[in-house]
Image (cartoon, rainbow, N blue to C red; front, top):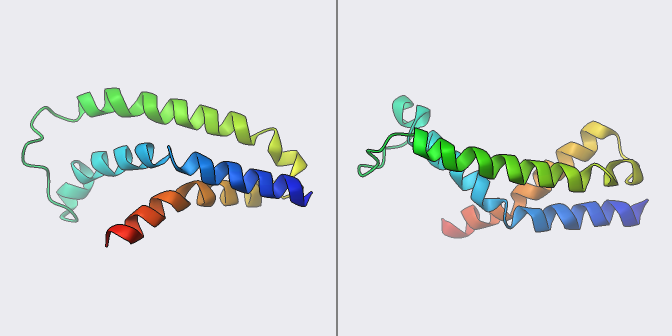
Length: 107
């Protein structure tokens, strides 16, 4: 049981390293779209091609990352002997850890 939990934790931490790219794409889209309109960020002044091009790039990246992440985690969930909500929450948090470390290190 513990071996599978540690395997899932390590795997999700490793998934977080390339997972920085989808998180960055999400932030870029939000900061040049709804968040900029709400006054939270300022729009990139050279971004004049519109957001559709970024969606054409971002959606396949999110889809591929999400499918691979889900396919890797689904077989481990029953073996980890955790309730599904606890398992999936822990997986998401552990996948976001590398992004958080980069954000903390950039301040």
